[in-house]
Image 1 (cartoon, helix red, strand yellow):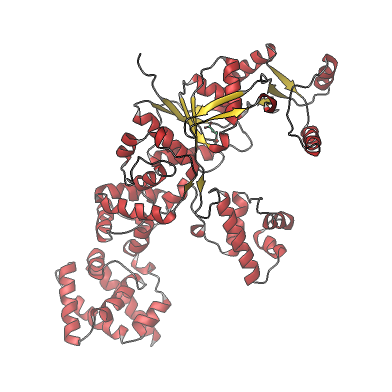
Image 2: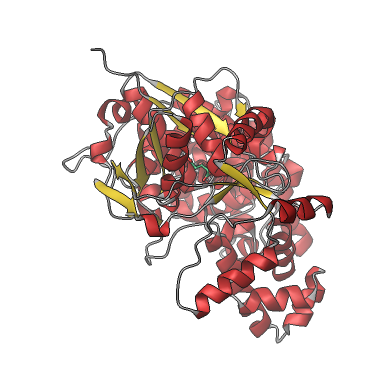
Length: 545
Ligand code: GLU
């Protein structure tokens, strides 16, 4: 008999940017499908109307495209557009007595939960025995209701292929869960089951937080006569200190820096609140409770008030890594090793090799550490081994999310040149920052006062720069080699070390004391722009005198 084709999927909820954990889930599912020549589907789980946004979906698709994790369904599946399909099934379950409307308010449920807590037992929701009259009463008073699935009470279990063990739930712990919310939308638990079945999903790889949810899903599959996919729950990704890596880490950093800010400037929480235009109550609540998180817009105003730049926050989202100049190839390789290995101590693999080597058996059971130094080393190696042509494409993709970079004005040929000039760079951001001097207007060079002081005002810097200008105006062959020869001759003649001459030129053309090789930089800028920058710098010297 022919083996069944593997169909895997990634089913994100579009409530924010795609984070590292989600990207790793997508990657493993994609690798599983590609390795087996199967299919990989993408589904947008946007049934939580309050938290899902269109913008998050757009961003998510963009991140997945950047990662190169292409999906095989021609049309994207949006759960929010499929309510009639879910409702038809829910109505059928209700008609068959296997699902029912439940009318408790949140407060009533809380009271029940607290009562159970007092009696030191876990709260288990089972179908309340309502009379026809009670139901009529609730309906006529217009009480909102949810629909719950009457889970058949029995022991449940399934085999988790990653953990390589049975996950079980004894009959006593089984409870009726909500399948349609009061707003008329299906819950995640319901929609996920229907959609996995409808699209023929054979393998579900997802985060550990779903380990027990899977029991609910299996109960529903059995009730609806659906086949049961193979389930594997992926290891948790941790920070080096053992805490779970997540969006929370960014919030933590903002809180720490806010506290430092208040201490340094002797400010109270109220003053901080006023500085960012937030309510004091909200800020006090957040600063004192590490479980509370600011939302995106609140975070932005606090960061602005305390002068915390975005670049200081730890990268958690795929978008952050892309923006910081990580290359997709090295990033995917790094992600793949968060909980998986191909055996032996092999670590560096191309995407094709990952596809070839991937297997569920290679996924580990214990949590994976997110080692930023290792990621940086991967990135450096990846950049070093990539042909310049390909790096130009990567740089364009980096620039697309860094619209403020002056490199956006560069031609492909120029980008190629700077890549060759700066070979050995660690990230595209580093390449960007160290070469933007070539792509900004001469008049926009910002001269760092400390550099002017140290390099030009001392040790005859301005005088040397003036002499060099006199030599450079006569250089006809404006190549790095010729410029090097002429400047070395000058150094010999004046008995000066190269640095004493190169540094003033560097400050003149870049405004700072760091730039790529000075001769290559001059060649790149060309004769006119180099001389112009030296002249405008010399003008600063005469102003100073
Ligand atoms: N929408 C769910 C989430 O983002 C998907 C879980 C699953 O893969 O079933 O966590």
